[in-house]
Image (cartoon, helix red, strand yellow):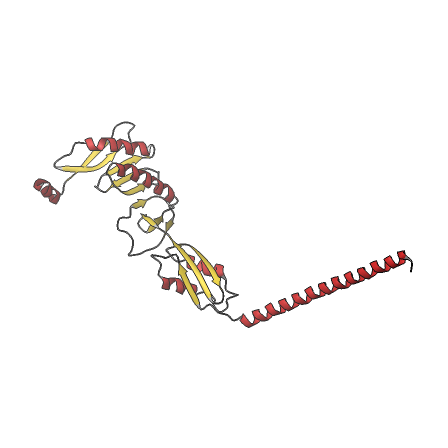
Length: 259
């Protein structure tokens, strides 16, 4: 046989084997995928009725009772692990008064994990609401609340401004052994502060921090009266201040005379 013809036949034979191998490999892959898909489908059918049987609550909530969390979650359809709407469960828990944020995760085969983050109450707001550490107002009640939370008042929408101002004034006064108990912001954005010793500071609408500092500088040198105590200090002047007194109660006079 001619060498060239022999070489051509060898190449053709190699190509045939490559083609056969490639087709065989392709068919094997297709068959494998079909088997896997069928297996997964059968598994889903077998487990379509898997239910949520266990619940774990994480985050150590202080004010939200675990029973309340479980009761909220049971409002969702827990009959199918796969069909359970995690976002719906998350919203149900989020609607609880003390819950600030929540994450929900399904864990195979029958467990639901709920991580709860609560508001941290830092102040009362307009008597019937609370403020969290971000200055956001929320409505919740608990007998576990500290009795020393400050009272803040102001127009709707001024919560964060009031909380930021309270922290600033409280820090200034605390350094000078004074304690801020309450703060009020009027509709005209005029500021008033109440100290734990009963003194009220009227700051007006501008230069608030400067006026608080003026009070701090002058207060230790103020003349103390035997028959009266300071009621309010008006700091709305560019320079100076005005002091008003209120008479001591009989019990206070007796205590003072004994001292």
